[in-house]
Image (cartoon, rainbow, N blue to C red; front, side):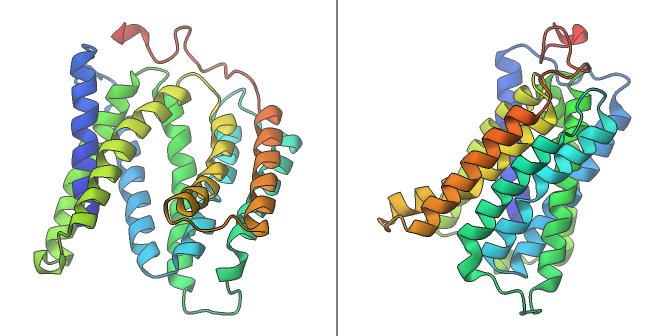
Length: 274
């Protein structure tokens, strides 16, 4: 939870600076507080489930389970966003891509070991909430600027992380090594800052279900980066997994709807913030 505080405080600062540089008022959100509050609760619960769940399962199992979120993004988009319909071709593509992820981590997964069930359930729950959060963001950017959505998602959620960390965690348990500091800076400035901004701008222009399927690329890219940084050989399993994920992502993206009726005429720039 302390890691979440550091990460999202940094991300919040990146969004705030970006909004100031582009002269977007993050406080001009009249009439949208309920939606922003619901998004912030989803955000807080999703991150807590992910962080706590990952601590109680293996990294491989966590990666596979959180990678289920594109299924839930597509499902919730089908139910909640007019025009963003789930197609059989899209489902087939997601199943193919997910098969690639399972193939990638099959060697480190155990279906008979029940010691990780609690952690697995928490991470899977986080995946469900992540899928729903993508759809809620998609609906909010119809009326708000992406910077406003991102700012209040973190600003309203940050106090919860601070309180929970103060109650349940001790500063003595935190070891600020160089690697830890660099990791938090990357997670905060790059992921919670720059990457969140890019994602929300994309959600303002494209269907949530189409973007969600690209989430299957994340673990494959992670493995490829690991082989590059740590000079590990690219195995046949990695190549097969890459082929399955690439084929499934292509099939799922092509099978997704092209444009959502909820998208504003000038995507990412709602009338009240132009």
